[in-house]
Image (cartoon, rainbow, N blue to C red; front, side):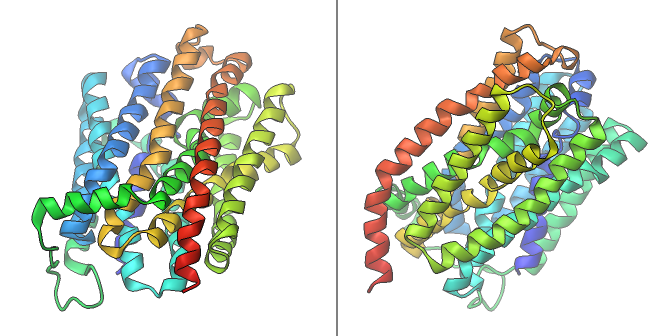
Length: 413
């Protein structure tokens, strides 16, 4: 069940990051500015973020199988629009549809993990799920870019459409929502929409839901910024990397992500109270320190320092999954979809702000096209990260004591 659902999540990450290594090609293909290029991902992530709560409510009502399959079909349609769009506006709408499908996928796979695996294995399995989803990033960097170079824009994106339809069909035929089901029929909770809304209200009244939101909003956006759009331009302008070196650097981050996922999943499972908080503070602190050193010193930087930066940034992905541990362990199972969806909103809202903020700051400096992305312009643009780090850590610190009290009551019964 998990493996088939994982195919849907890997496809979602591939679609989400399909503009990562092709950002410069997209700027030339649509003849657009930095801000307009940001809008591709800004709209996708904004739609993803605002869809998380509705998707969580739908997940509680209709089950993971239907949501993963529907999400795959939405993403297939969005990629088809990207392929054939004659104007930028239509392509941006396509990315928004990709965001809608993406929003339904990850939280549904997380729900399947909670249903099919023993309680103590769930934190580690959540990390493994997120980690293996990173294969979608590698697919977008290498096979997808290879196909784009071998054929053209239309063929490359239409190929993703075909893959999405196949995966959605496999999920519909092969997945059951929990081990107690004798077939693929999902038992809907009683009470209809009113019960679903009551479940959402209950999730929003739980401190652990908001604690998870701020964990996700604070830990993840830095590596997301680099992987999804601005990593290539930044590495080329500031570190003077070649495209091959930049691809390898970001791909190595996916490998590092694997190690962090196992370590953090183990710590979160064995030390569910103080271990999780320590992971969040260590991850965000390391990112802030490494970025500060990078921005205050001239480039290109030595290899050992760039490895440290990659270690710090890559820890953000696994650390963001701690959000789902907080949400799961402080909410009732009936509200898990809504709680997980709300927590998952955090990182996508902060990432959307960073994506658009970098583009706006580049345009404000006159860097309106890839050929004008200079060292100074890129350094100034990525400063948008610091207000979000400060806000997120402050809010997490405020919500943590109440969440810890609930966790202690649960684990010390």
